Structure formats: structure tokens, C-alpha cells
Image (cartoon, rainbow, N blue to C red; front, side, top):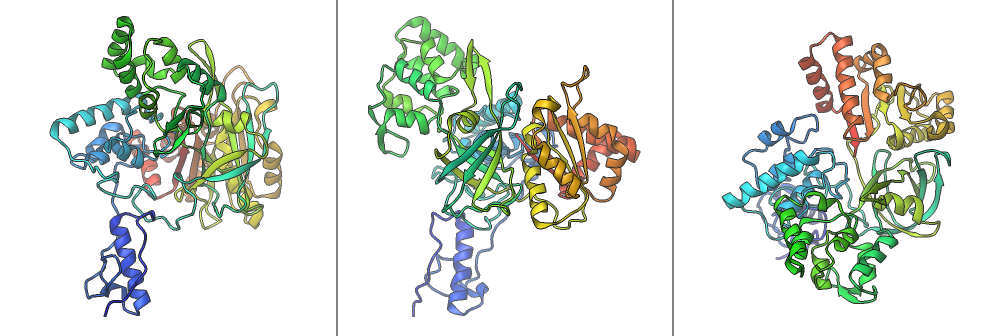
Length: 540
């Protein structure tokens, strides 16, 4: 007799093996049998076949402390998407709009053409990706053509684990939240513009923990959208087909669905193919042969303005634009004071390029353009490896200059809300004490109340010689080493390219001088801290 059993839908965030195992497990539970005696065939009929186990894939190269050549060596012989992953910076910073694993899988599937999105990896990563793709094409390396990676899971965590709980809203289905407030933290005369952003999660069902990140799907700057429309001689009301096959006004697609802040190789090739002026066509072909060169640094409006004879059909134009990717921001609140709200600490990006002032896509959207009540599309990105220790007696060392203070504010707010105290040391830095001491009053209160044991500050521009957080670490090397010897957990959050590397070097120097170790031994000591889950990074 056949027994009808519910099945895990294919839309659930599990791969085929994981769905099969879960189907078999639940089939056994619902039928009253032992889970091991159920088939993993979709859970529709019962037999004596064993359930398929969940396969957890190991990524030995997923360690940001390893040099690029060593990471690539560890991935040698693996499928192409895993070799591509090894070329990433291994930070899962989200700056590219992916995690290291999902970015590499998107490239391997041919969905993502831009090889320069790994900001921490820079030119070395982009070069390695290009070489790996060339070798793969030459060798005829098979990749999965069904939109799923050959190994691992396309959704879920970066190390192949099944997600603890699938939430209703996700990267592909964000929640339309409302902005509650947007307050400037830095002084009005400060060189930096840093905002405290509060977002309402009411009716979302979204839950988060201190250490998690919030994904933001921003909208492009309206001025940039207007410039692109002008270059295309379009009104914006034209009905066009988006990537999902839906008909929408052109202006809406340009605002919410495609990347305009930077160009990509596919766009250069399209423009080269339709340029009417030979000189423009030749320039584009030369740039393409050189990998795009400086043209990839131009926004789409600048590129169109530079080659006015190259005007492709709008449908073709939209097809080669990159999808507008979410940005991940470290959450700066604990849900305990208000589980229906989440806060972010956002540094508004503004810079000059090609004689024009440009704005950061997400930071300007959140920190300047959005007003209370405006819609903000969000999802929670769990960070299970960036958590406070379960034992409050474990010493905690936190290094978070600038907006890198965000997750540590969440940690301290969590402890204050629960009344849990423990040895906690924060290194915070910024440019000026007067303008840039973020959350000064809160930190002072937590210090007085004992939730923060020690606070060391580094304001780089308040004296002739620049002082940074790594200098404060070195100044307190003996005591910091004592904390490490007591099993302290070490956390760092902020800029990956310089600050995090400088902090890592300072940490190794402290291990050398205070622990009496050689340079190689100190490097191994710090690497062992990471393997023992005592060294945590949230960098971008």
C-alpha cells in the first residue's frame, strides 16, 4: 500500500542530496518507522533503502590568511567553480553582492561576466579568475548548465551546511521594510558623513542575532538614471522586458534592477559592435583586448557619452548590464531592546572621478536619499561564525575603527540587555575625537556599567603623527598577550585592504615579542587561532 507523504519543495534552500535526506527523514517520522529505513526518493513511498546522508563539502582554501598561490594549490584538481572560489579573498564580505562560493559559482555558470567584483582580492584575484576560465575553456572543463553548482548548495551557508531555518524573505525575495530614521552620527563639519539608520521589520518575520548582516537592495541614483536615459534618447516610459521576462517601464528597470555605477566587458563588446564611427569602434576594441582597462571604471552614462555613435537597441543594452546586487551591512543592534527594528551604521561614500562627483550606490540611498517612511528592500544574512562566545567568562577583544564598530555595538547592546558581564576590550578609532567618536555616550555608559571592561581609542588626525588601532594594540602588547593566553576570542571588523591586514600584522608582532616566537611561529599561532574559531573577521 502506498503512503502519501509531504515532500520538501524544490524551491526550498537545500540541494538535491539534502532534500532527499530530509524527505526520507520526515517520511520515516510520519510513518512511524526509523529514519534510516526510509528511501530518499522524494518521500512518496516507503521501502527498506537507507536515507542519503547530507554531504558536507570541505573548503580547505577558505582561509583569508593563506596567500593566493597556496589557496589555488589547495583547490587544484577540484571542479572549476571551486578553483574560482579559491581565487577569491575568502572574506565573504558581500561587497561583490555574493559570498565567495556563490560568486565563483555564478562565474562558472556563465551568469556573471564581471571578474573584478572581489574588491579585497583586487587585481590579483581578477587576473587569477581570467586565467582559470581560459584554462577551463581550453580543457573543456564541464560546468553545470542548469543554473545550479556542480557541488555544494547554491543557497544556504558558504560551507555547505543546511541553513538552520529558511526565512520567508531572502536575497531573491527581499522584504519591503520602512525606514524609521536616518540620523547623522558625525559632526556637521566632519570630513566623514556617518549615519545611524533604523529600519522597521514589523510583519516581516525576519530574525537576526548580533554579528549578522542586513542585505540592502538599493536603488540607483535618480540623477544617474536620468543621464543614462538622456544618452539613450529615451523618456523612461518605454515598456521593456527585464531579466525575469516581465514588462516594465525602462526607468523602473534602470532604477531598481541593473547596475549603472560601473561598466562591464559585455557592454564594451556590445558598443563596439554597433559603433558607427570607426575611431570609436577601434578604441573600444583596443580596450576590450586589454581587458577593459580604464573604461570599466566609468559609470554607464559616462561610457555612453564617450562613444556617442554606439547606440544599441534598448533590449540588447539591458541584457548586458549587470544585475543590481545587494550590499551587506553589519547590523549594529541587538534584537532584545526592540526585535521589530534593526539598525545599521552607514558611512556615506562620495568621491571624485573623471572630473565628476559620484555617490556610493547603497550608502547614498540609505544615508541621504531615503526619508522616514520610504521603502527599503532587506533580507538577513546570518553570520554564524561571528558570534559572542557562549561562555561570558571568555575574554573578548574587539577591533572596529570607523563603521567597523557596528557589530561590536550589537555585542555590547546584547550584553547590556541580558545583564551579562565578562572581560571585554574594544579598540576603536576614527579621524577626530570631536567629530568622529561614534556612539560615544553609549560606550561611556557601558564602560561605567561594566559591560565594557576596557576601551582604547585612536584618533588618527588629532596629532601630527597618525595613530591607528593597530598602534594601540602594540602599545598594550603585554596585556593583550595575557588575554590571548587566557583564551580570548579576537574579532576585527572594517576595511579589508589595509586596516584588517595591519591589525593581523600587529597581532603577529605581539605574538612574536610577547610569546618569544619566530615570525613563522607567530604566523602559525594566529592561523591556529582562526582554525580554533578564536579569530573572527567581518571585513569588506
